[in-house]
Image (cartoon, rainbow, N blue to C red):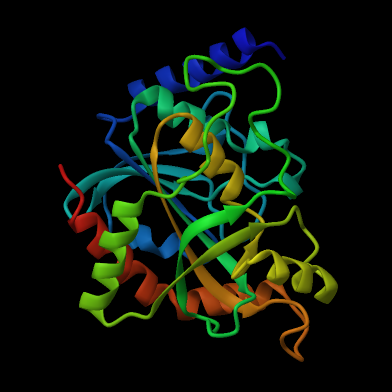
Length: 277
């Protein structure tokens, strides 16, 4: 597919969303596994199924509903992606991050990403939260591979500061105000869908990773290429392979994400209350 074809699809999708939603806010929030219930705290003004949006993929993972919501979160207008797309579902990283390009085309300035992650740093316990300060993308097929979309960013984008330091500072302050434990750490991407082996976790730990997951990184790369400000928060839903005697399962991930949902929702709400209108 040529860059003209890609841009044409982005434009078509953006135009549909413009016509469907009352207006386009500055911020898009992406809900990871177990956080779909946050929309119960949102004053929903409009919503549309991914299946109705031209060129959008559909979600196949439990906990990812596949709905784009527009509404008020802590009084702030936002778009909420109830579910995301993953490489392991059979999509390329370019396909999985297509929605980020659409958001950039719409003029969205801030991307808030949430995810479920396995804890590598054992000071972090299941159901605790971690704000991502950096990531390791060695195992991620670059979503920027192929013709560069000059409209969005340069061919060789700097990745020195993908995650917005001011957003991290504000979120940390919110956690202090709420008495919520919020770790800071490095998120490592793996392709999935199989969980990592103990040997792979040891390697990731040697690289400096604090948590590991199967999303977020490709999205953050595309958002940073597009000039967006990025915040990413991981819910530590399990100890990574080899760090616990229990076998890993998606049921454990969902259960611990649910256990952390009150803290996650409170923290996200407080952060949004501090965003500028």
